[in-house]
Length: 257
Ligand code: ADP
Image (cartoon, rainbow, N blue to C red; front, top):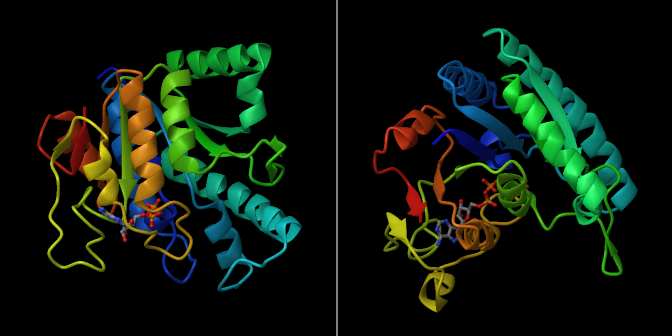
């Protein structure tokens, strides 16, 4: 592939105590810069703002009030981008923050603007680091500017950036025949060509405390990119060097194609 979108989940970026997982972030910076150096265009979609914000404020759980959550996300997002900027700068890699809401992509002018921005950054070998603009997005039914989750966002970014591949990194090795944390007999499915009822029946609930979607949102992201003729790989983000193996064509995680 010449252009890839990599999405990292909260569970990959934030430790269970809401502190930043520096080991993973620093390896991610190394791997993604190396891809860039080899001429592959890279977009990073990163979750974790809420978790990082909670960690900074020494809170264990997110508060119930939406404005509180949005303020905490804003704190976390700026700190997280600060860490990414520093880690990538070790390898002289320039990154840029892009915060999106659904409405931006609904209007043709702003939609085209986002396309142009990605285009310009990628041509200049800059890695856009994308997240939902959590601190202002609204999740009301009649005025929904929030994305359902960052899995959906990463599928949309794959379309907008016209990437050839979406890599979703989570805290699990791939898609199983059930939630492996609850069902010991669940086995990994290496390749999925169609999201049918059987596949949907394997989807269990969310695993981590701050992870938003669990497998349901990853499967709908896969459905979305497949509908646009693009493949998706779901793999474990514990060791981001797994991205090298994926691009080398090795069988890792679950390939949706
Ligand atoms: P992230 O923070 O990376 O988005 P989530 O916690 O939201 O991750 O989702 C990953 C979790 O989904 C896994 O850890 C697992 O507990 C759960 N899960 C549910 N069903 C499945 C399945 N069929 N295969 C793999 N994992 C599953």
